[in-house]
Image 1 (cartoon, rainbow, N blue to C red):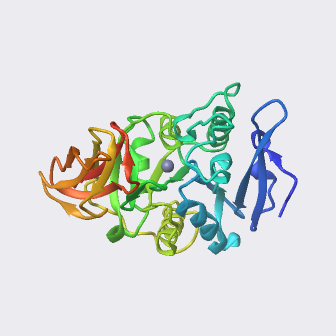
Image 2 (cartoon, protein in one colour; image 1 turned 180 degrees about the vertical axis):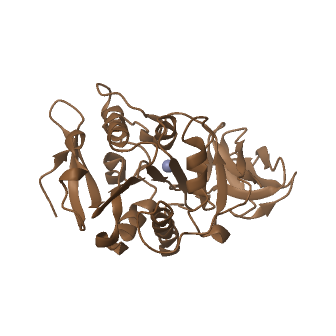
Image 3 (tube, protein in one colour; image 1 turned 120 degrees about the horizontal axis):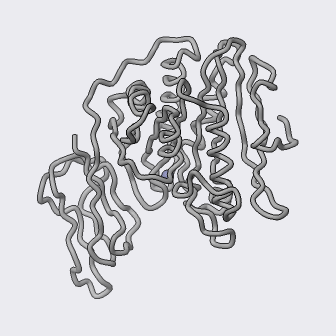
Length: 329
Ligand SMILES: [Zn+2]
């Protein structure tokens, strides 16, 4: 392993020896005299081809992708790779080290996944966002692929969701087509994602780079099945891109589903009556929000039939936080 960090802004994959897995550190200046150091796994193939960039850990408490990226990279035979595979398993190292979704309050409390495209002269989290975004847009273009792996984190449980941002532009169709080749169709929902700005995967989509985003069950855990689901998806996408040999994954031809977000109407303790991934019907009570005297403050009701693709599993909730998603399949 190369221990001397390379400035992220100067990293050049063309300088890597081809046909082997490189592990090293990339350095991002975040203040007067401080740097963030991000682990990088990289393979430059012997033959030219597209570039794939795998990113996880943009939220520090979302673990499946952090474990899946090195698993997928280590299972590749570097001598057979066409093009370049770059992988940053821990996007927000500050959040990861503090066992937190966001950067710790002692740094700036920033949510990296709401900070893109970043600000070079901003807070440490904004500078990290600017460096990651510049890395992606400098090294990738319309024939390449970004994969941004997320998870439910510590306060929710999700279904496995694989999708693309509904952001109009040149990357929209290619992003959807790539998401349709993640594989493991029986195990996941094909997801049409709201065009919210500020996430890594929304800003790379806006920048014209085909981008797949995914969610895993989470709830603070990191199950081997979910890690393998993600690792298989990355392997399938490399085959789909023609970057590694092997059978091209089957195309998922289902209609892509959006989700309805259900917000807590009141603060309180959310007592759930359903399980994540369960099918629910219109009008069904998903849970009750109570106060410390046991009085009912509000009920959480399913607005329509569908699969419960997200459920808040952390007991207390503030008004306006989401408590569930129902898939519009
Ligand atoms: Zn996330």
